[in-house]
Image 1 (cartoon, rainbow, N blue to C red):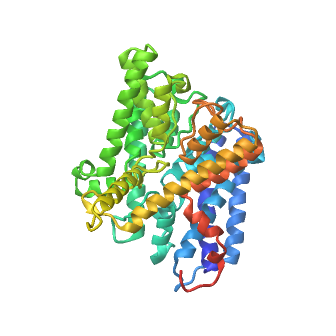
Image 2: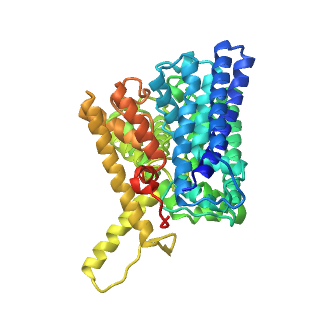
Image 3: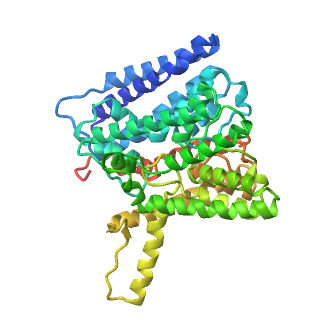
Length: 486
């Protein structure tokens, strides 16, 4: 592995992290937040110090090129560095301890959106905008945004893109990786601006509109009030949020192609249509259940059901009411939607609809082969045969997620949390949802977790965002051995 090249590019990334702290610093200066100004100046200094040390060891030469190992190392170590540096403003401002600062930072960048702040309403605007900005940067991907802005990755950039991209397939829409990253970034920015303008028209102030737009499009879910959306009591805002959460659950690569070839690309996308069908069915069932069992009027039930299904299915985690008090059937359907995670290539976490579809189709093919041993059957998606490696990859990821869920639940039970709460927190963490049921609650976060559980939550949020295997690859001893097989 070319450690010199990896170190150099990581130095650029830490510099980028420091630059991202400039907008909160401006907010702190304008609001005359002495503590906020000091916190962000110190954090930016730490970023510069990290950049200096990395650049002192590293360097880029003309013939350098990235390989698989370099791509994995830059992605995993880059995310870890940015998460640690991103925790500095919380700690330096005095609002959180060291562990809680790291949890908040990882939760923000990973798009989980579960906070350790017991009262976010006491936070200054500089900290609030940093939380939302961390959601936004982590949503599309730290490395993808970095690649869109800076061209240093060269021909091996596809290895970095593959390591950070989510979903069973890693398709690109343009010949050059940087052009691909730039197109994704422009769509991301355009949707964020449109979302912020819509929220403003729904009655939010410019500051709250921008904050919520960033966390909506990133499907992160950080809010500026303890009850998030519940504080507004605005039906039009909830409708707008429902639409943008669903839009953000679609593949951004699909939007790039649709922009170039026409809107029919979206209507022809099997995964997105299945996603819409699932959330439509779940919302209908919950609406009827709330109408019958909770005595809600039908329009309120429909609004609440649609909003929360979109919120949890997209892994955004916005809350408009305490759904933990809903009837058991409604809560059951909400928990099932947590596993969806939107479409491959979206900002949503979770399993992804494409993987679920592939798993069911794989089961169908296996059954057909048992009945007709001589037949040749293929799993198809969007009318095309899917490679076996992609199908088996979906099965491997599902197995890994189940194992990780189980391990995290056991860790929390060892730490004194009961089975139901441990399972609920584990599912919402691995799905990058944030809110859940029980101890975590619809409007709660990680503040009630014991220290050991918080530390493991950081690890599992990190693994969930990077989809497990790249981190396991980095931790493998063979990764660091000199080999020509990479």
